[in-house]
Image (cartoon, rainbow, N blue to C red; front, side, top):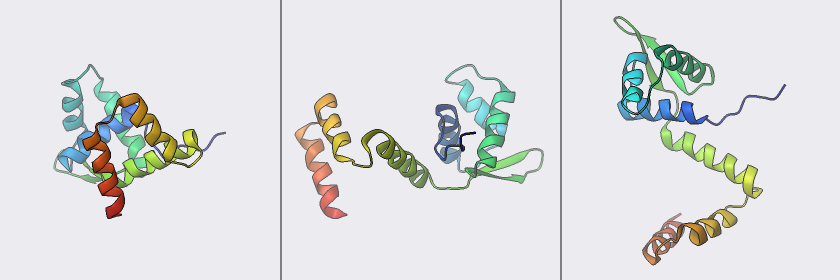
Length: 123
């Protein structure tokens, strides 16, 4: 059996984005936010949030009438781990081919490249 991935699926990431934006949310809050974008079942959202709690991405506390979920990790940390995992899996741990791909395929402007260079010098 394959170990569970520490990165998020597309559905999980969509839910986490809602919770990060709200800072705390009930299943109903997330369900209503997702329903504005696409059709989704309430029970699906509830199940996915339970899975996210089990995976350590959400924490829950008992509210007045429902559980209130909060992010267990900051968005930057989770997204950073997902990017590192992607770079390791696709580019054998080297970010350079990813940057070359972005420059060539997405036609980054000179301004974009200058900003990347500025950020690189800063770190």
